[in-house]
Figure 1: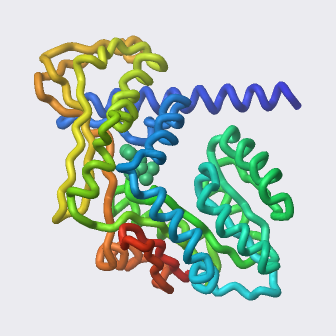
Figure 2: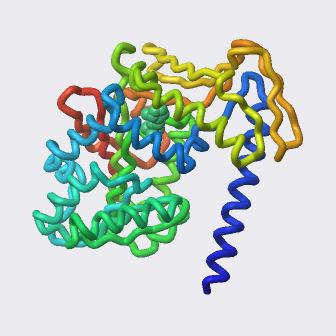
Figure 3: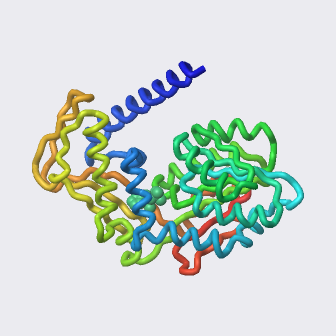
Length: 329
Ligand code: AVJ
């Protein structure tokens, strides 16, 4: 019923706010201070990320789009699917579907028998994607699934249909290596032998290319990072003055990790009403907000070492900036 739906939505929002509150309390009490990049994505953050994807410096999206547009046949061969039998093409995180649409177009033209199953926590993102696909690719069968990736995958496992999972955009880069290994392991636990997992990753490369992607000249990435403070102000009654904070991007080329922090430019105190607590900042003190891990073959091999996956193939864009690894369960 409508009442049930409204109540579920309310309690989802309440438990989300509760988790947000606890995470902010914990992160700002730590030394060094931290806030999770997963909280970047409120309405404003979503819009800023779309802007980031269109920036000249942010090559990641264009590089992976290049693979999906120009190496579509290699992707399909990597999936090793039988053209005559049904499979599910599952995407973790719906996004705007720009890259996936290139693949869907070719699968449809080649008369593959499949459902496209985008999974996302945001029902809004799914509704938009579904409407767009109905217009642009009306013959592709789309079954959107709202919810937690692992809960949805566990429910899909029961149908025992062959599956291809897409996890694009170097989204895995926001995880520590230990978290990434656990994430991939858990995906494997929800799949059957022979199923495929495509992971898109940004590759380790020169600082001159990577750093500007996180420090664009228009300052969109700075806004994206600092928006986290505005979100705390808005959702938790904080009194951060963003003029007293700065975006600080760093890239360590040996390690292959881009890191973003928010730096307090002065000594100051910030109060968060929902926590009934104040936090002291020294001038120059950092809040760590994001890691964007870059990969190579050795790192990918380490991530999957203790999982049930092996590497089937790796497909690169024309500049060798980005890789789509296809793994077999
Ligand atoms: C969405 C996680 C792939 O780390 O490159 C973009 C997010 N952060 N600019 C990334 C992001 C700053 C992005 N991912």
